[in-house]
Length: 126
Image 1 (tube, one colour):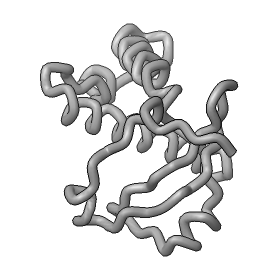
Image 2: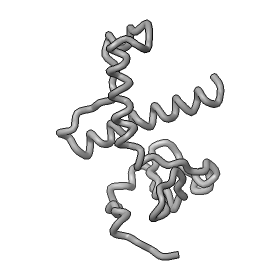
Image 3: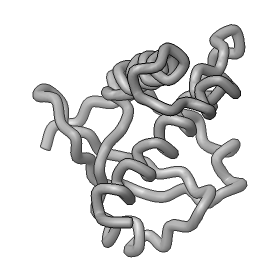
């Protein structure tokens, strides 16, 4: 697998995680990232079942677009981040961005002690 293949794989996992987290937060919202048997058995991208899957996936991506950011791996390593940890990100205000800075990492199992802060509520000037 080449670099682009890994990127697609990571983005696919991110969309699946986004869909599951969104479902946990809004339990009335149904999961949208799934593959039906007809979708899995496709032979050509033009077939209706795979087109339905692509349409669903594009919808999830459009909704998630404002929630997915790139971060430097070195910053996660600096904070000794591990699987299951939650990341506190700093996102520039104003212009749209694909990059965010890691402010801190909350170790897995400790997140229930910390109340979430909505970005609009906490505005700092630098």
